[in-house]
Amino acid sequence: MDLTELTGAILSYGEICDHCLGRMVGKRSFGLTNDQRGRALRISFYLARNEPYSPHEGVCWICQDFFEGTGEWADRVVAALEGIEFSTFVIGTRIPPLMAEGEEMVWSDLSLTFAEPLKSEINREVGKAVAERTGNEADLTRPDVVVILDPVSGTVEVQVNPVFFSGRYRKLERGIPQTHWDCRICRGKGCERCGFTGKQYPDSVEELIGRPAMELFGAEGAVLHGAGREDIDARMIGTGRPFVMEVVSPRRRAIDLRTVEQAVNAQAEGRVEVSLSGWSRREDVETIKSDKAHKKYRILVEIDGPLSFSELKSALEGLKGVTIEQRTPQRVVHRRADKIRERKVLDIDLVGSGDDGFVIDVTGEAGLYIKELISGDSGRTRPSLTEVLGKPARVTQLDVIQVRGSAEE
Image (cartoon, rainbow, N blue to C red; front, side, top):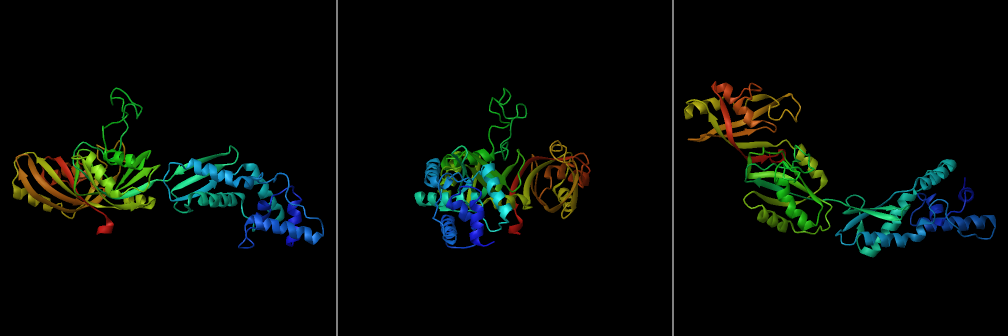
């Protein structure tokens, strides 16, 4: 079928605008808009038939003359974006089923393989108009904001993409969880037990970093993604733990990270401090969560009965380089699968002693439970220091002093 016959076949379905007519051959040529293609097809059709030219009149049966209101849609988008700081955007459209079915029927009937969907042209044309009005660029891969058009309701919906930044945090105070925990009793709704806060703990590392970040970015929320996590009763000191912070729905984006760092360290002074390294992307969240970092701990160990410094040092040598079989500890089995894991003790050394116990440094593979390495957890961890010594041993204090990812090996 040549173009003249094809144009006649398309026109036979009913009144159609030049945009929709041109889209039927949208992928057959370059350098023209669909509007220009459609007008050229219409003119050629009437010239070939030696008939008076008949321009588009009435309402297009496919798009309902959507493109006559492109400027109005762009104005709605600009109004919806007022007060939101962004550099890049992308337009999306919820195409009504009848519109989609109508053009798909033509494609199927006429075996068209080079047509462009209505959604694509709407997104592009409104996007061009928005770019002209704002001076910002459309970006299909990493937009700051996504704007969804709804032709049925005549409304626009704005989705603000998160901002990500990365760094390391040090937790200087015990008793703070890494992330927010809902109250176990009311599950976040608020009750007498939690003081109607909905929280199991008053604060978390996530909130201590997130609150000042949310204020600076004008954001709705902040989510901490850490390279592992320390126990609530452990400090994270030394070089700190790598993290990525996801700032949710920020109304401001051009914030100097030095300002963020200073705000966090001032508001969380003595509890949490951060050193920020730069901006991140969503892909970095998966990377940091999947990286099996080795961790170095400094622990204070209490041992029942008399024991000399040299005796303990010799016992620790028996654990150095050993692969430990650990069944999920009793203290966490209620929330984790009950299975046996093998983890290696990379290094372990006695570094001091005092009236309150012995100070031991342990470096282990990711996932090694340090408290159970010492106590044995009633035989669920083997070998353990308790087993090697033949007398009970327990961790009374634990600090993480280094988190070292595979990229740092």
